[in-house]
Image (cartoon, rainbow, N blue to C red; front, side, top):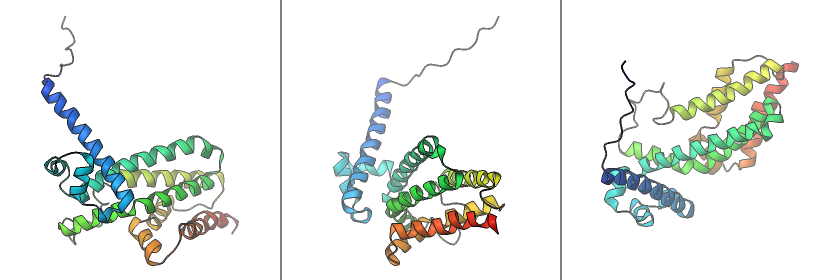
Length: 226
């Protein structure tokens, strides 16, 4: 009888395993130092040299992992997206679970608005880096989401769509095109647009939130009575 083949054991040397552990430690130190410096001085005011010094790594080590500040900001944004998704999921499973779907949607929009405004500077640096490097031009496919944002956008679209669908099923809002409405809501939370509203128009966080609630929570809820 042929015995099951055992799982192959790692043949990497202790030095190779230590190198991988060192690389992971470097990554954590770099991201933590960047986040700290960005919070203190602003993303645009911090150089890669300052990040390397604060992280206690050589500039060669920093640039081997992140070719430029835009790449570093992408990694930091990805980590923040994961943390945000876990926090929203936790809220929906606890305090948000007792609320009707449209109030849960309002809670998600409030958290998403705060998250986007807080992270707008990171996204601006990413966009500027891609523009300078020529990786974002008229040849980019407008039907595709920004690189690295596919899973994040799909997750938000599914979350908002599920809440709208539940509200329609309960009769809280009139039937509508759920997918398109979810896209419309998320377009209103476009980071660059919100950044302009906040700094260019001078709209406060509270004013933007009230406008979103009026259009997408109260407005949709009123449709069922028409």
